[in-house]
Image 1 (cartoon, rainbow, N blue to C red):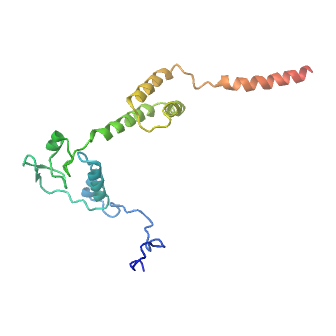
Image 2: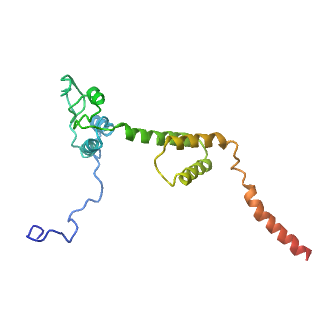
Image 3: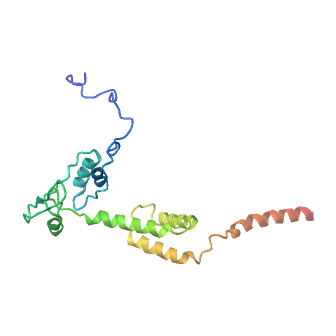
Length: 191
């Protein structure tokens, strides 16, 4: 038995395992479910964001029907469930609107913004040039996934200089092989 004394470890996997992941909109196509799936949780710390995202994912999120009272300004200004501070008070004090602890919410958004800008910049150029730029970025920064402003400036400079590069004509690389074949055939004919 797993509950018997001294037998703290189980030797078998759980009996009933899920074959497919849970989908909160599988049988529920209502506007409320669509709204909750598109809800962007902001103004909270990472832990609280994960909690609220879990509640949304497994249909445990109960949205507010009427605005709640903020514990700081005591106005009925809270529009999101599970929050205790309104967005104005939370941003003013730089704290999480749910757990009221100090938060650095600006840091992850700054990291995501350059990646989005880089993707938008690289979207309009041909695949070959895009791969050239990505190889250069990975080579200079050893595959770091963080895009810094320095990298962004380098990419912008590369894009400006891309027109000067002639990547479509790679005859120079093939000439070495072609010349050696023709030289061998000529030398074979001469002998």
